[in-house]
Amino acid sequence: MGLWVRCNLAVLLLNIIAIELAKVHRCLGECDLFQGSWARDPSYPLYNSTTCPFIEKEFDCQKNGRPDRDYLQYSWQPTGCNLERFDGVGFLKKFKGKKIMFVGDSLVRDQWQSLTCLFYNARPNLKYTLKRSGMISTFTIKGYGVKVMLDRNVFLVDIIKESKGRILKLDSIEDGKNWRGMDMLIFNTWHWWGYRGAHQPWDYIQAGDQVVKDMDRTAAFEKALGTWGNWVDTNIDPSKTRVFFQGISPNHYRGSEWNERGANKCQGQTTPLSGSKYPGALPPAVAVVRRALSKIKKPVTLLDITSLSQLRKDGHPSIYGNSGGRGLDCTHWCVAGVPDTWNQILFQLISHEK
Image (cartoon, rainbow, N blue to C red; front, side, top):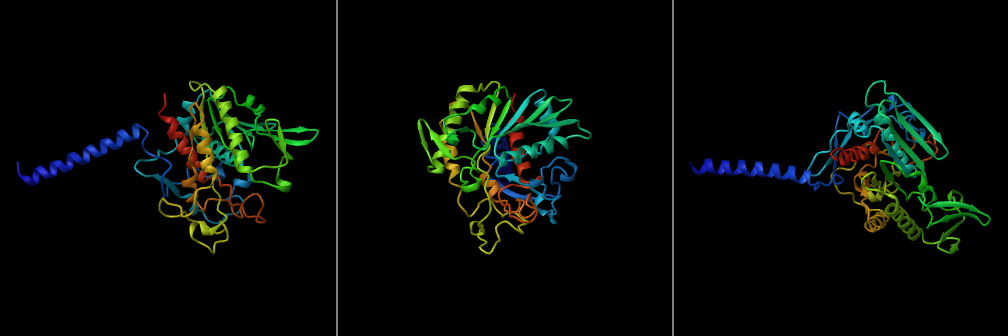
């Protein structure tokens, strides 16, 4: 056999080995679905938002008059592997007769809203009910018996009204009684921890026996996550319930963070940043979340959405949100839009589980 033939056979063999190793790495979960870049993709969005009849006003950018659609036509491309296309029917079959609950603030509501639309568009004439009782909304898909629920609890820990006033209790999770019996839980919190003045929904903070007017908000956030982590360790049976933490959803109010100092926050942004690296730093809350999750003994999966969402300066409602042009929302996300990718990743993480 000639040298040229042997060399080509060797190259072919190495390529086959590389492909098989890549498959093994994917099977072992070594592909990081949260690192990659956005690519223009005419097959997106995953659904037409005008066919989802219950998108909440603050997320319904198309209905609110957003003139461009470019932000809808990007797909997430992880480095070194593929993100599977969302399979709504497959998801519903896997969770037939089961209950999924999102718990947290308006950013997890963004993701819940996206998932309900993905399910609604999974097949023609899907029958459903959508009800709200107190702070809990329940989207039920008939025929599959799947319930997709939302508990609007922005701090995870409790706010209790007492004679002294409204007290944010960093050591208390009475609301946890609503989270038991779920087959999958997706939590988040952070957005409300920095609010002050009229937007602050509490008057005092209590940690143990100490009640204070205020304290370092990041420290309070970390204390609350510790309380939540203890709740998970005490109440979750991993053989029955899969637990996720959404991670920190970034905002885009400072153009200097993506090297566009003249930008008016996120207004007028129609395309993502190219490449896989965001020029700005990660929000400090990311480190707090990672530290808190590392202390939990029961398995909790971080939906590490921060970096991939930082690249999407174009995905926010901007002036096409709930304020009707009177405000500039660079915090929440349009639906359809970026939260659909969060749910694609969620689906891929659970789709191959037994």
